[in-house]
Length: 267
Image 1 (cartoon, helix red, strand yellow):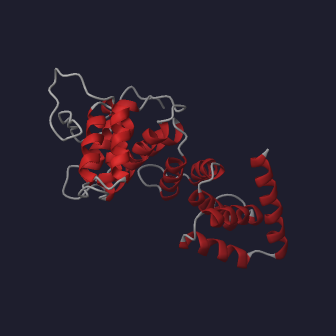
Image 2 (tube, one colour):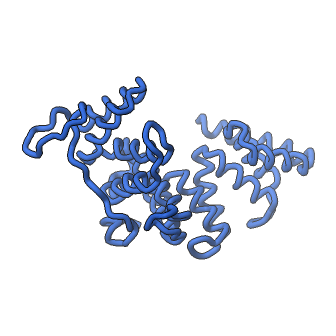
Image 3 (tube, one colour):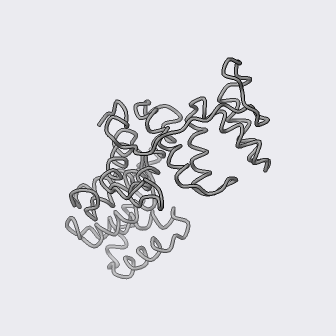
């Protein structure tokens, strides 16, 4: 699905704001004055200031780059406000930055270097629409969450979006329940190396809850997930449970599948 703009489809409900451009010293830059630096230079300066712990200087530089429409600066500020990293935590402001990216860059080529940040903005918007933002006009809208995930999953091929979309299909949240579509999206994300997708895919096919049981292949995916998940508790527990339930033959076959999978990725 291609979009001419998200605003035309009514995806973004919050008004977006534009602040006057800031010079790096925090002063306002007159509208008729040539910007002292490019947005890319401003972003790099802001990133360097963040690394040095100079949060005020970093914020001015990043805000300048964001106001010039530089998507990476907008994404960085969105992430900062979402996490309260160097700025007061403000989910609505984060939502606004991600919305600006989605409205402006929805049809950017998925092959551009910035595409993964644009895709992630859609994923973050999906999370916000799924749960809403308390005490704001951003209310829970699971159907919009599904639309955000679906766009990033299909157009940008983003594995996080594919995983999130699969979960909605499994649960029937925001639309129809379709476990087979969920498996399709999980398989795509799993093959891109996303441990969460590998774990959930492995669990489903090991148990045979959606398709006929494939214990060895399911255990293979769970093994890959455990190796890549950094000790994430639910992934470890799923892998251990499957390992205990599997027969010796299934465990041996899982090892063969794993070797073939790894050899195929190296070829």
